[in-house]
Length: 249
Length: 175
Image (cartoon, rainbow over all chains, first blue to last red; front, side):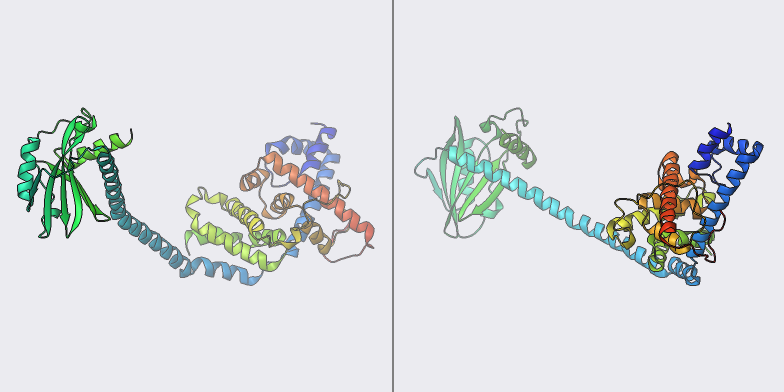
């Protein structure tokens, strides 16, 4: 490095603390060149003076040290952070605690909604006989009649076992499949029960053919005085799987 | 005394001075330093080398300063710094500078120049360490310090022309 080249690092940002390779060569040159050495010394002197002036302009107050120490030793910090962690943990636990039943509830609501939708769909597509084919005053008799007609045992929902209940059985058709439509009243309100099978919805293969002798009630509810129910041979899980498949079509 | 106290508190003075020149007033400087130490205490586990404590604290100070400036703009002197002073650049410092002149120049300096300059003059850190603290390339740090000095020299020279020379205790003589 020569004196001309030395001007750049001198001008750029000379620093006694730099310790950077950028200045190594420049400092080496200054050691061997009295003129540049003097320039550098003067420059560093002025830099030091500016730095000293800046330091003198900002006298460190005696209190700042104590304030900082107090602050970092203050139990408030730990209390605050402890409280924060406790609050966070409690929130998470609460969230988890609430979300689990909420999730289950949401899932059950989804299932109910799916069953409702499918049931309403089936009602629209049914050709229900205009008059009851069988009338009885208890569910066992209707169940027996329906089981004979359908060729398998139909189990009624427990919800129907109330005193003020009357049953009428109708034969219904969904496409080429025969299903059972049970009309009943609960406390004078007319309700209908449908029995169906997965294959009636052309979803054979989606669920394994049920081998049960007894049907499963997969849904029962009352809406604006009209009750709907579904009886299936498939387990509720399988029926739900059918619903999902069916409803996505 | 905790390990954190042992390592960090010796730098309170340096940090306060830097905070003072960044914020421009004593109250904000104290707040800034206290905020820095709270932050530092919380993230002390991130300090990998004890010898880097000062530059680590400087980096926290810088972030706090930038955050505070963005959120609160409590550094009132910086409101009109969008366009830096356009005084003619000088390569040498004027012969006489008063603390008031220097303060005036600092307060008119764009924050992007102010922080590297303050770190350069007060922290005792190398350019490499400053660059790491400010999360900037070393070339950027050097050019900003260079630019800041030139702007300040230009401003100070302008002030010299506007005001009669005065001898002030603590001023620069014959430099």
